[in-house]
Length: 136
Image (cartoon, rainbow, N blue to C red; front, side, top):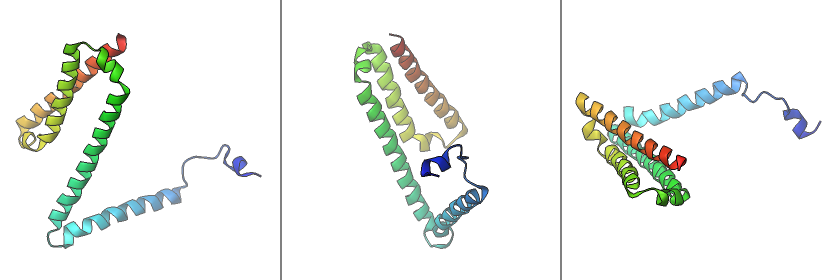
């Protein structure tokens, strides 16, 4: 029996023991990350530093995706008329400003509603321009 024959028709999901070990490993990782926050003096600062590093990584990933999409769709963007292109760039810029100012906007209940409404409006404008660009 060759190596390829053993895997034909095999169940792709791991056995229950492997799932338990994976879950236990993930819980242990979270517990190790929680130790500095709970027991080390200034642990709250360590948690803030970790969250800031994660946020920077997340935003860098989003920027990479946006740049890749821009490079792949340069012809489509150049065929848009000026008003649609301005609406698209304005909506993307609006999303960037909303992400940058989310701490101030999310402090109160009214700010949350305004923030969600503006994010939805920017998303709608991006979707509308994309839909029109696909029908040209």
